Image (cartoon, rainbow, N blue to C red):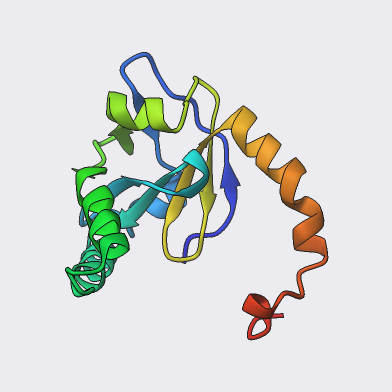
Amino acid sequence: MFLGTFTPKLDDKGRLTLPAKFREELSGGLMITKSQDHSLAVYPRDEFVKLARKAAAAPRNDPAARAYVRALAAGTDEQHADAQGRITLSADHRRYANLSKECVVTGSVDYLEIWDLAAWERYLGDNEEDYSQANGESLSEIV
């Protein structure tokens, strides 16, 4: 499981050091894709394959399903961390997530998220109250 919040820096070559506690789980390869809220998602390769196969099984005559599969496939980059645990984020991914030098890596149970620090702080400020009062129908199975 991926849990916690970390603040690695993005270097001048677009490399980000993954938190040490996650490197073993990602050692078989990882997939970086555009995620919601202008963040990036980092999946272990095997988990991403399951997600992608599930998405690809959606009816091809459904325009929303086609758009999702296209965006998922086109916005994904396969990586292997180097010996120092660094991954290289593409220029497109850095632009999409508006990444500056200051980044945040958060655990999201099955995957990691990469955020620009300022965007993450805005997100927390905008959504903290929602978390504190979580009782919506979609959360009824959880809380």
